[in-house]
Length: 256
Image (cartoon, rainbow, N blue to C red; front, side, top):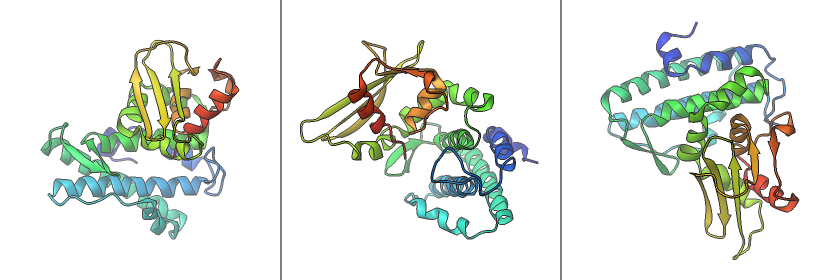
């Protein structure tokens, strides 16, 4: 049973846990390099690091965000130990997020992975991780599509995560000193997501719809594309941009 404080802070935890329990730890996932167990290891590391950084800030002793080597201790645990560790890390994150909400203004800026984010980011980012990686387990079921469609998922992906999502993809493009690519991802009735990359770096932003879209899709599919995923049904997205532009934009959308 999930404690009420944890359920209130991370309402997506219960569906994620149900998806994990429904599969063998060594079962494959839509994240091609990861099994179900690998996803759980990653999530335990996420919950621990989000809580660690926010707790240190609350204590007046900020710390740098660690890399993904933080996951290695969890790989050495048994399946039962890993499950217990993940649950305890989620509970700790909920406790720290509640303390931060009480003691800090929501506009307080905290350093996370070399940039600054606001206090609500820490719980919200774990919620996004739970939604995204549940999709890695379950694919395009109703629960996943509904969660991915929520407007805050797009906003968090663009505003709160944003540029790091494009770093891997940009490295796979041969742009040269004068090269530039721009993509406009459109979901009818919402702002476009505009992604760009050139010799100086990359950017991502929300913008008023203008001109032709590079890719048009439903909101859930757009979030998946931003994170380097693909829906099982490719007819959920459409494009008239042409093969070369489409290939380059989809390469840019490489996710982590």
